Image 1: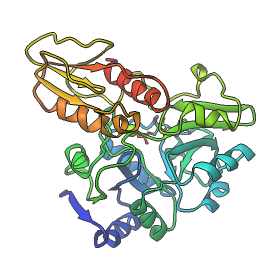
Image 2 (image 1 turned 180 degrees about the vertical axis):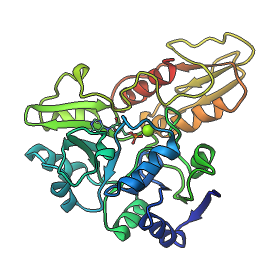
Image 3 (image 1 turned 135 degrees about the vertical axis):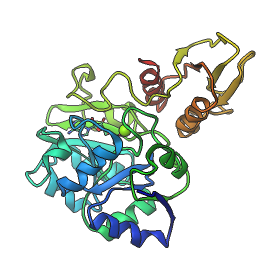
Image 4 (image 1 turned 60 degrees about the horizontal axis):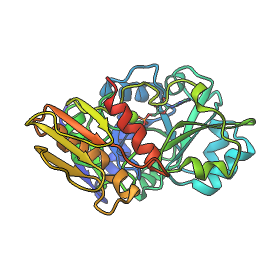
Length: 311
Ligand code: AMP
Ligand code: MG
C-alpha cells in the first residue's frame, strides 16, 4: 500500500470517503496525531490494531463529533457532564460505563469506554463530515514515540495506511489526560495537559495506584530505540551520549535537544516527542534525559520520560 500525505482543505473529502469505506487514516489532533477509523465498525477498528501492531488487549479512545454522542455511547455521571462542559473540545479523555452499541474491540471487552472530543479544527471538520464517532489511538507503531507531525506519522506507518492528513505540528504534543469518572470520584489513568490541579476542583481524586488497568498502563511505552536514562544532573557516559535537556545545554554531549529555553513546561511538552525522535535518529548509544519540575503539565512529561526509560 502506498501512503499519501494530503493537505487541507483539498484532502478532507478523500479522508472522509476513506473512513466511510472502513479504512483507517491519520489525522492531526491538538495532542498528537491519531490513527482514526469508524468506531462503530469492528472491522474498521481491527485495521487500526493491525496497522499499529497494537495488542487487542489495549482499548481505543473514541472521539465524538458532538456532545449528543456522549449519552449514546456511555452513561455519563453529573461530574462527567460538568467536565465535558469545561474541557471539551480539548485534551481530556473520560472513561465511563459503555452503552451496548460500542463494539467490544474498542473497549477490549471492558464495560467502560474512553471518550473525548478533539479541539483540532481539521479533526473536527473530518469528524463532523463523517458524522459518527472515530476510534483514534496515537498514529505510531505500538510502544513507540507518539507522532506530533505528519512526517513522524509517515516514519511510523508508511505503507501500512492509505492517507495522512497534514495539519502541521500538534499544539500540546503529549497525549490527552485520561480520567476514570465514577460516583465516588476521579481516578487519573494517564497524566496530560489537563492537570491534577485542574481536575481536583470537580470531584475527589481517588488513589491512582489501584487504577483500572491499562492506559498506556504498561511500564515501558513511548520509547525510543536508543536506550534512555533519566537523571537529575546529566553527565555524558561515552562519546556518543545525547542530552535531552529541560532548558540549558551541558558540556560534553554529542548532541543536545533543549525542550524549552525559557523553562516553559507547556513548550517543553509540545517539543518532547520531536526532540526524542531526533535524538533517536542521531546514531547515539545513549540518551540522558534531564528530570524536569513535576508541577502542572511537568507531571505528564515526567510520566512519559519514566516510561521511555523503563525497559
Ligand atoms: P492512545 O490513544 O494510543 O494514547 O492510547 C489510548 C489509551 O487509552 C490506552 O493506553 C488505553 O489503555 C486507554 N484506554 C482506552 N480505553 C480505556 C478504558 N475503557 N479503560 C481504561 N483505559 C482505557
Ligand atoms: Mg498511544
